[in-house]
Image 1 (cartoon, rainbow, N blue to C red):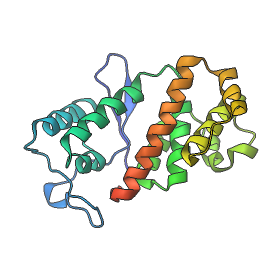
Image 2: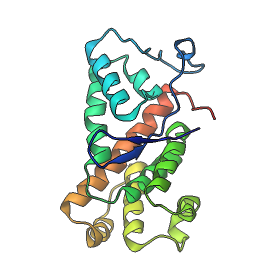
Image 3: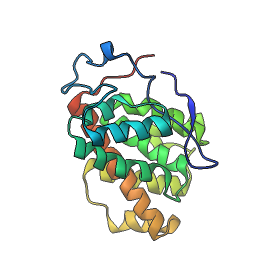
Length: 206
């Protein structure tokens, strides 16, 4: 899968997309997908607006968005949350991408994980950390703050209680705003992983 660097619409920001290149209308219905993929000329005004903003900002409408577009208000709600979560937290983007890769690997969401590994690398995460992410607890490549964030990620993804001890470890490294950003990142991408697997969003080729 090719992951091009794309210009965000905000000045001075460069981002990479985790999606494949757009496909022709003839290829929009993917084998195994549980709902249709909405094409490039949606009738619904909300969907048309989201698709237009996705193209303007990221030069792609992902298959996930095309599937969510079967429920226009939910696609709008999804992007209204996902796009600020991507760009506006003050926590280091590389750390957040590590957390996202961890969640998506645990959930088996290959569609999304491969793109976020490229995003992680783009935002300065060394390859050895991506290689060791599955066994981060015993790896020497992660800092104390990264370990705290990854432990929080695992607890949220597993649906277990975040203990007071774990929360204290998180707060040793992150203030209130950062802690909220970390919790929402882990929780949102846990949902992303579940949605991708349940709807059987097609894996990108290449």
